[in-house]
Amino acid sequence: MDTEKSSSSSFEDLTNAEDTKDIRKVAAEAAFGDGDAPTDLGEDKKQAEAEEQLEESEDECDILGNKQLVKRIVKRGSEEAIRPASGNLVTINFTGKMDNGKVVEEEKNFQCHVGDYEVCQGLDMVLPMMKVGEVAQVTMDPRFGYGTIGLKKDNETDFVIPPDSNLTYEIELVDAKYEDFPDLKGFEIRRKYGTRKKERANYFYKRLEFNTAIHLYKRALDFLDTRDGDPDAEFLKEDLELSNSDMQTLLEDRLIVYNNLAMTQIKIAAYDAALKSVEHVLRCQPNNSKALYRKGRILEGKADTQGAIKLLQKVATLEPDNRAVQSDLARLFIKARREEHNEKEMYQKMLGQAKKMEQKTATRQKQPLVDNSKLKLLGYLMGSILIGVAGVAIYRYKY
Image 1 (cartoon, rainbow, N blue to C red):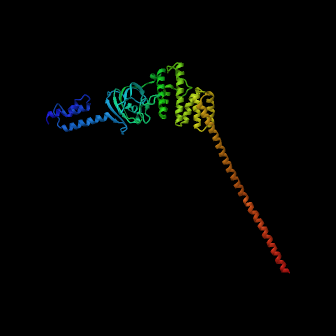
Image 2: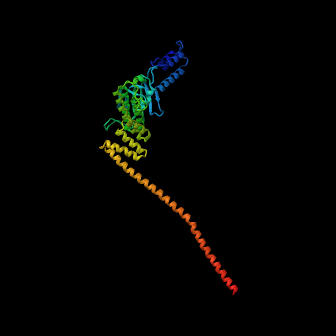
Image 3: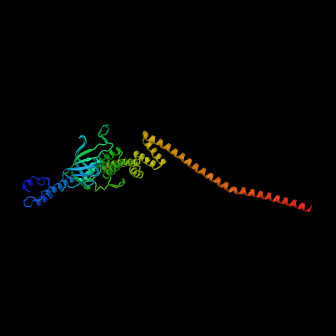
């Protein structure tokens, strides 16, 4: 085969490309040796095509295998670049578009923690698969974007992203960093992260995505509370750079988060967990009306209506103008009376059944006595008849 044909082959064109991999160089050297023409151009072409397909398969990844979340590499990161792990702080640039090309989201140098739902779920799932410096295109089903609810700005009625919208993002992973304790011991950074997690949790609470909200409230506590959830414990001042006013500020922020966490746990009927959350607040602020109200809701959920009434009565004294509390209190009084009425009816039925049982038992005990008296009367009657007959027979015999 002449060299003219070999010089125009796709194999040589690929080996001269700038992004050619080492494996292609090895294949080219093996094919050409010291500059001689390849002996089998067909095999070389098949090998080049196979390598192309391999690279394409590496560049595009159908993450779930159902085309609902697809990642395609636009620009590769360096071989030495790291991939972020869950909890790492990443810096990203991204632009999100709908199918009609309209840009609906755009951020530059946006920082978030991987796995903390601070971006839409599809991007959060893709981040651990990227390397620093990489640019990727991510197409996602509404399930991994903003779902059937869509996205609105606060206090606005128009949708930024309509419900059930497919989205395509171009995302660049600028940096990824593991934060050690020295990075987190300052007051400003702890409050910044804690507040950010709390606000994101509030966002998911409004969307009725309560399990995600609970996860984020707990993550907020990781930054606002380093004492395993014990409000009575003290920060280690030799470790954390906190003044007394800083500690007080973090305490107040922490109690707000515990209150919100309790309310979210009530929504999924996790009453025992909610009770623990609200007790953290009441231990520090016994007259916190929100905590008392939520504890009342918890006790009602645990079928302790009287306990709930006592707590709401206390809230009513603390907030006499709170109509919601007055309404709930009135409802609980009606519920308590209904429960009391039902309880009385149940006891009456139980007593009525007990009396009937006693009457049946007494009747059964008296029945044999009646039968015995009848037998005795019959015996007396038969005896009298026999005596009379015997007397008549004797009289006739004699006379």
